[in-house]
Picture 1 (cartoon, rainbow, N blue to C red):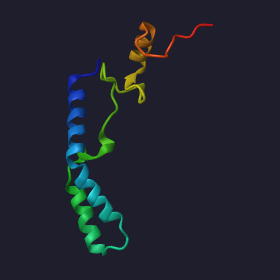
Picture 2 (picture 1 turned 180 degrees about the horizontal axis):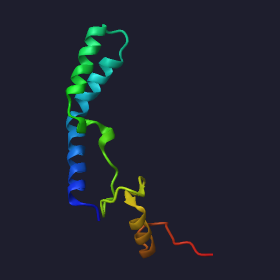
Picture 3 (picture 1 turned 45 degrees about the vertical axis):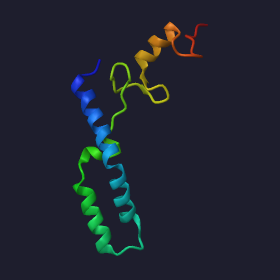
Length: 101
């Protein structure tokens, strides 16, 4: 089980990303538009830098839904490898069977 503080920190980051997504996208479009004047693009870049760092999507860490573990994460199932194995052994994941040969 991951530390509660790490899990909560990641949840706060997700909220910030949702909150600033539209603003961040608009500023990035201005910065990327080559037809706009350089001063306007530079000003948009400065405004982008003023936004909170944790409002960037790349700051979010993928974590297991059950334990909060950040390593060995399977995106499709939103689980870490340990929980995936445990749930598969119990037959809780449809179509997944422990192999034996």
